[in-house]
Image 1 (cartoon, rainbow, N blue to C red):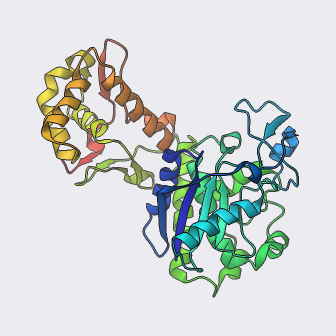
Image 2 (image 1 turned 135 degrees about the vertical axis):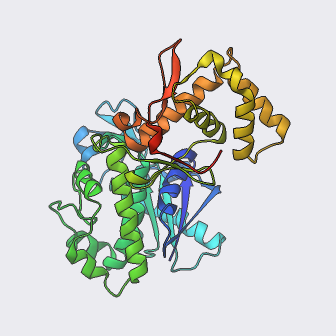
Image 3 (image 1 turned 180 degrees about the horizontal axis):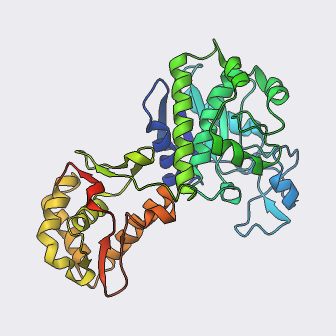
Length: 375
């Protein structure tokens, strides 16, 4: 099974690639493709007129009214720009035709444009391999990266295509009272929290998919859902009392937390080089003394990065160890943010580089938990 993902222009590229990373992190029978060079734009005539929206409207998924662009502060009533479902599905069909995508392959549009019915996601009843996922507003309901629920909705659409015969079947056979199943209707959008935390499909819904989707594809979808659930619980700080995980750094210089559902900590090459340097010194390093480790950083960075020649690499390291530059501080801040987004603030404290101003910076993690196969 093939799933093609594309995004509208306003969707952040980092968010989009994170969704893809989550979906591709579990190998299996479902293949996920994406195209960053194809960006969907909307024309003025593809919007409805502006309309005020109340807090009750905003939280209601089955809303048959018009909207306008969301205000960051969410002061109600607010205005939103909204498009019809057929406009979203038309974008999918255009992409399908221009890229010669087979009719039994999914094309799913990730867009921050609200839709008339105010749904999180939907498939085209006329061409059920086309669909959309709304990427905005998730921070209103859950305290974690929106990449988790967006990736979850991708899997939900794939499964629902094989569980229901059209929109009417979906609307009449889903669970109006939430039970923690992927097919909970979530009339009130906040109800989605339950099914995201369970990451489950009930027995009745599994029976609906029997014979309509292959077992390898079904198992792969369920495995991805389970992985997303685990990662989201860590990110929401709901597993802050878990025993610490080992930190595995493999031969490709990828960072994993195998005891936390094998979560990957995605750092850039310079960030990895800085982190690996601090792993070598449990007692810590003064920020002002980074220049004393210049040669070490050259060696570590050159073993990690394949970008640019040796002279360019040296320039990047020289900037990072310059006491007058904020390059190292910026990289430490991003390392901290990546760990916090991945495993929550409490657990992350043991893994990132920290220290008071003027004091040694260090990683608290017991080095017995570090499994290092590089450098």
